[in-house]
Length: 262
Ligand code: SF4
View: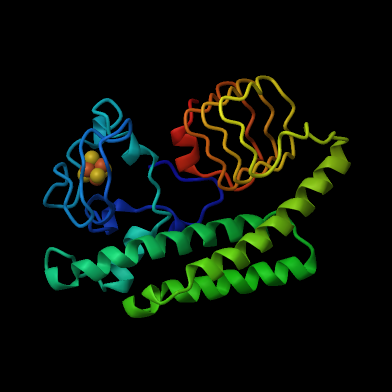
């Protein structure tokens, strides 16, 4: 897997230190992303005994697009090596249900941690910096907890708090960039949470736009300028990003990019 620029190793998937957890714990349904149905807790038919993927070299060609797009943000190795101390679900099947339940919790915590660290790199004001640092420290501490502590984390509350901090850091950074480069605000319809499914945004200047949570499914973004746009949680499935400029885009993740046309 190609490292994400600026991402620390603890938040990068390291499949060599994971028990193939995403290939066992998570369910998927036959669709454009997967060729078969699989229930949560059932090992994928392609998972080898050494926890490697038997079709790793031809995932996309064989219809496993969802696997290409998935990013655990380093949650897999954290659950395998830290939470469960290096003892696999194969060696201790009685721990498997708990391990599978912990994985999505850890993944969300790791994703938030990655975004908080990205936000700290944006040069936020002092108050926001303090808030971001405190949240990052608390989440990092939570990721080291025991399984029952992880399952007790109030993810809704944590997400709400983190979301507010990221919003503030993003707005400050984008305002600063707008003033510095004389960037005009994007069109009104280009806004957070907007329904832009199949929208024609080809070649548009969307620098510093707030597109967090926007539905950009199958949107035409060819040659669009998305530098410093906030793309937190934007749905980019099948969006056409060929030729688009994305350098400096905020909170853009590998799964978002993998789901788009690039
Ligand atoms: S196809 Fe490979 S990567 Fe995808 S779930 Fe199965 S074993 Fe894992």
